[in-house]
Length: 114
Image (cartoon, rainbow, N blue to C red):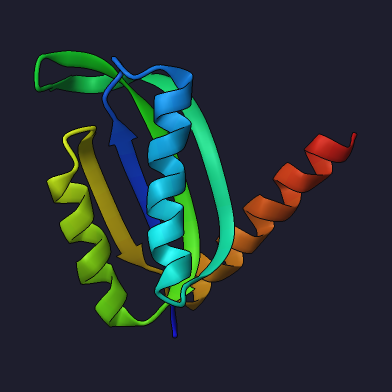
């Protein structure tokens, strides 16, 4: 299994409940297909660098997970089919990126404890 990081942007016209429901749908897709979720971050509503589909903001979500390479194609197909998703990107993490991601998670966990 490889380690991946996916960031996707949801349309800003969603309510908080609709946004969380959509995030849970994609998380469920990963878990149901044997992926191991390592981290999930909801970055909230952020301004986009440039307008996408005439929208200037979007809900950013980050998933870190371990999965088989065949699952990525399924996930990205579901992103394309869902009209709530306006952008997505999945990257396979190599060993240095994995170390960095772990440091970032630990740093975030330490901040939340304090």
